[in-house]
Amino acid sequence: MPSVKDSVLGLLGLATTNLAHVLPTVRQSPQLASRNIDDFYFPSGAGACSESQMDAINEWIDDVTDILIPAALDALDAYTPNTAQTLMALLGVEYDVILNEPKDKDELATIKRWFDEAHSFLDGKLVGTDYDHDKAWIFCGDNYQEHKSVNDVAYNTEGEALKDDDGEDVRIWQVPEYAAKLSQGRVPVWIPDVNAYRFARSGDFLPGTPGTECTAARAFVYTVSRNLIIDVCTSGKEGGLFEFGSSDVIDGVEVTEHQLIDRLRSQSVILLHETFHAIRPWDNDHAKNSHQCYSLAISDRSKAQASPECLALFAAAMYFQTNSQDDEKWVFWRLYAEHQDDAWGDLAKSPAA
Ligand SMILES: [Zn+2]
Image 1 (cartoon, rainbow, N blue to C red):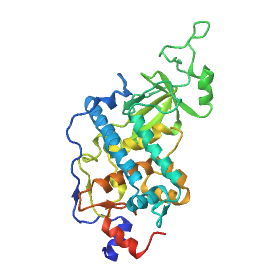
Image 2: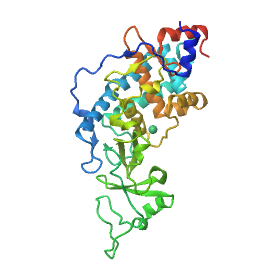
Image 3: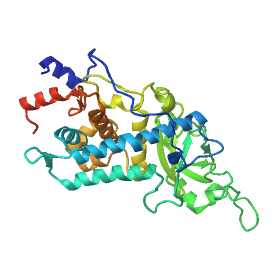
Image 4: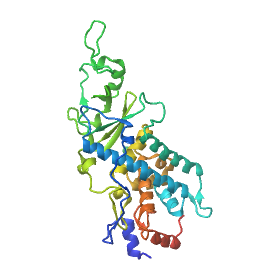
């Protein structure tokens, strides 16, 4: 049983110096399936990924399809009280303690469908009819994006300069479709290889300084001319996606008692987050961390259940719940890692409302 002091520390999320538990390596061999990475387009010019970046992306795709998503789906199927408590905390799925089932089974079915669709997407199936191609693009870094002025020559989807009837160059502002975007205060950005303009919000960039988008994100997703693009940042905050941390889900993340689930957010979990954007590009980040998920789970649970971050953190929690060493089952009822027995002890003292 945890002492009162321990419980308070847990709620505050203060790191303790308890034993560190290192998970066993799950991947059996370094052989990388080329199946998944072939399911994407990669640019050959600006924005191309290096060989080591490609290897890393390949591993993350494998992690997500073979480990994270199955961990979430298996847990949703089994629906143990541990899973139910975490589902309630992160996604607002209400739990009937007497019947041991969700109060609204449709909510559970919808969440399962998001994970199924994320898996299909990473297996190369673009869901829906929103795209002209059956594959998404993966770019590395954000320096490939060419900032254009409204007076620059406009290009067509073959990357050729547009001409008017007199053979004169057409400017970006003269193309009605583009002019409509400009009138909304958007900034034209040319995407090479895809041969399309992206009309970014001016806040996404400091005009004339490519590379600024990756300072605010480790990865991001957008659509351009019915193409879906996943951008994996190579530089920026916290060293960027490729350099970030030395641990990921597969190499063994250290879990310590009272550790916030957000701190177990590996590169693979980030890719899963972006994958949820990819299957629902119209959906925004309603929650950006577990505490925001927790608030949303109470105030507007349908938004929590559609939030990429809340879904991705749930998958991470289920991974640690089911893959921890036998004598050390971790649960995340309160968003922080707790020993399963401790969590049950607290429940006995104060039953979940
Ligand atoms: Zn996001």
